[in-house]
Image 1 (cartoon, helix red, strand yellow):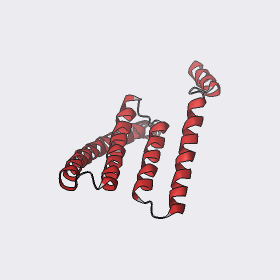
Image 2: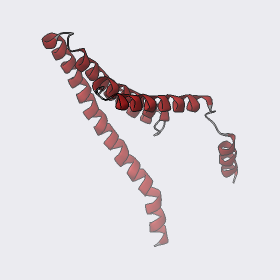
Image 3: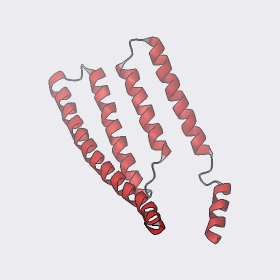
Length: 148
């Protein structure tokens, strides 16, 4: 009985990793489809409305970049051994806030709040870049566990 339980505990993470990977691949396919759909929306805006509707065009460009960043984050997830880099979440947050400022600019207080959110995200990105990637305490602990 104990062996079966240990086996299930060892196999559960592998099973969930497979479910996660398949789900992310499915999401990447959907996002790729939406990315191509945005390209068609660009061409439609350019050919029908011209450059006069620049707000809608800028909003579409930023949506395009949001799709692009999510797809890039999924690619990085697989390239970096099933790990989401934090900086991609910050990029997506900054792009989303810039899109809100461009699209929803009627209320000045909202624009100020969106700008402050962008500032906080940029400060977080700066702090993340100045801190060392490898922590000596974590490396020492991992080395100690490998030796035992």
